[in-house]
Amino acid sequence: MPIPAEIRTSFAEANHLVQQSFADSGIQAGSQVTPDQLGEAIEQFLYVFDKLDNEYGEAGPLPYDDVSQLGDHAIGFLMDLAYWAERLRLPKSKMDLEKTALAVAHWVIRHDGELRTLEPLVNSLAASANLTQDVPTLKAMCQVIGDVIEHAAPGIKSDLEKHDATRPWRILNLNYAIVATRTQDRALMEKAFDTLGRNLPEDCPAFFEQGLQQAQKEVYGTEVRELMQDYFKRWATRH
Image 1 (cartoon, rainbow, N blue to C red):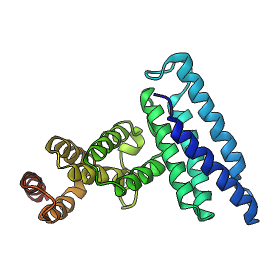
Image 2 (image 1 turned 135 degrees about the vertical axis):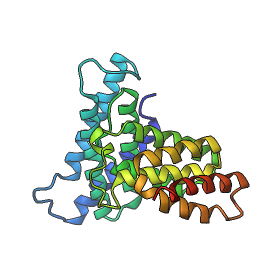
Image 3 (image 1 turned 120 degrees about the vertical axis):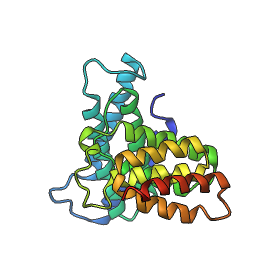
C-alpha cells in the first residue's frame, strides 16, 4: 500500500509547525539546512515514491532506481527535521516525523531495499509500543520490528559498534524481544528470542535473567515464565 494518508497529514502538520516555530524563534541556522529546505526535500521524495509505485507497482524491485539510497536520503532528511522539532520543543511533531520515517522504511521494504538508518525507526517503534497494551497491536508491531531487523543493511547487522550500548541496532533487537514478551504469544516470543540470540548473543544472559524476574509478575502466564526459564538456562550455561 502507498504511504497512508494519515501519515501524510501528520507529516504536513508537523512540517508546517516546525517551519513556523523556526521562523518565530529567531534561531540562526548557520551552515545547517533549514526546516523549510528539509520539508521541501521530503515532500519531493514522497512525490517520487508515489510516482514509482504508480509506474512499477507497490511491491517488488524497481528497475531503474536505487531504492535503498532513495529511502535513506528521505529518512535522513526526516531525522534532521525531527532534530529541529526537538530543538524547538515540539515533541509531538518529532514523533510524527519519526512515524513518517517508519512509513518510508515500509516503502523501502516493499521494494526489496535495505535500511541504512535506524534511529528514527527505533524511536517511533519504541514510542508506539509504550502507548499500547493491546495484544493485536503489539503482535502487528512485532511483525514490523522483525521486518526492519531483516531488512537492515549488512553494515548495521555486522554490529561493529558494540561499545555503544545505546546503538539503534541493539535497542531494536532488545525491543523486539520485549514487545514479543508482552504479546505472551509463544511463537512470536521464540522467534524474537532466537533473533536476539543470533544478533546480540552477548546481551542474552542479562536479558533473560531480567526477563525471568519480570515474568514472575501476575500479568504473565505460566507458559511465559516457563519459556523465559528455558531461554535463561540456555544462555546462563553458555557464559
